[in-house]
Length: 387
Ligand code: TRH
Image (cartoon, rainbow, N blue to C red; front, top):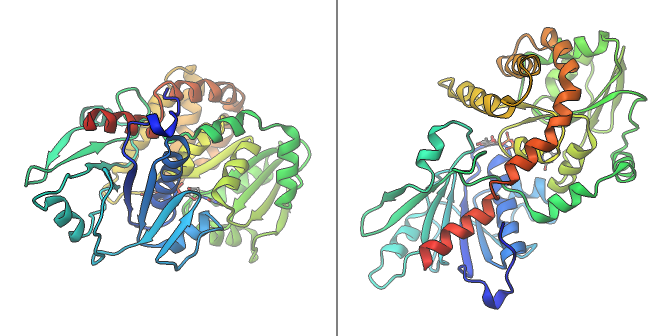
């Protein structure tokens, strides 16, 4: 693992440009914002985060302006951009997040006769599939002598690893019962006595009603915290009433509390405070693994069904070292959640597997950390290219 060097000894580039286009939801900016901050905080790099939709950042980071053309936040410069933006200066590294195409002015700048082009990287989507290792760090010629490198985050040492800031790891390690109680209280949550405390962040999901039925009619008390978002209309339909942030309702063995959408830092704390976390997309999925608790992943749906292969690849890796019964129970439940049916029936076996999954969650997180983390691995790659 890299130690932060004093700035004068730091051999990496001083300015990096990160381009982020928000396709939908919060994952694109969620990942880029964390990475930009970590590069600044741990390596002293001046990051210019080019963001087409600052309003999405304002949801995750309350200090951000939803409209400003330029803003300085936590050491990061955030610039609004679109395809027509004229960029007249670049740093030594250029990251296109998730294959977003940079403005034509950026390509022209790199192709200018006397230009020293940056190390040009395409930061790819996260996948546990095996082909990723073979594509990680591959160069792709871009004409005029320019090259772009594919950089894949991932779960093995042959990939770029995952975002895991030093500050987050320390805060997670120090998270205890007192901090948890205080935090939940600040959200207006009084955990139901003896209940399994669960957070639920998901896309629309046809399996929600049957799962809530199973929880409400089950023997064990459940307390489910639902941040306001895409799943809320289905939750309201199941409850038979319109609820908003701050509402708490009881149905049999199940208590439901609707939460506001909180800052990214508080969302981490929410994950650390729960016994089980339902997460989605890419960034919340990774954060739940750092929470060292069992998780249920609702993967981002792709039209051709490719997401199910991605899901199975991660399940196979994540569950590989667990006993067959635990593996089967977790696979059945998480697949049912993603297929939108069967989650209610698969719940009892999954619930029985939770203690084993809980014991394993810390081992899994340590195993992931042994691969280094995305920012360290990016910096190492750039150092080698700039030598
Ligand atoms: O929001 P997501 O579904 O995001 C994405 C996008 O759809 C993107 O296009 C796709 O490529 C990607 O998934 C795979 O899920 P994700 O990635 O988990 O991002 C959610 C972010 O929102 C994450 O940074 C955590 C944050 N968050 C908060 O800050 N506060 C909250 O209250 C909640 C619920 C989430």
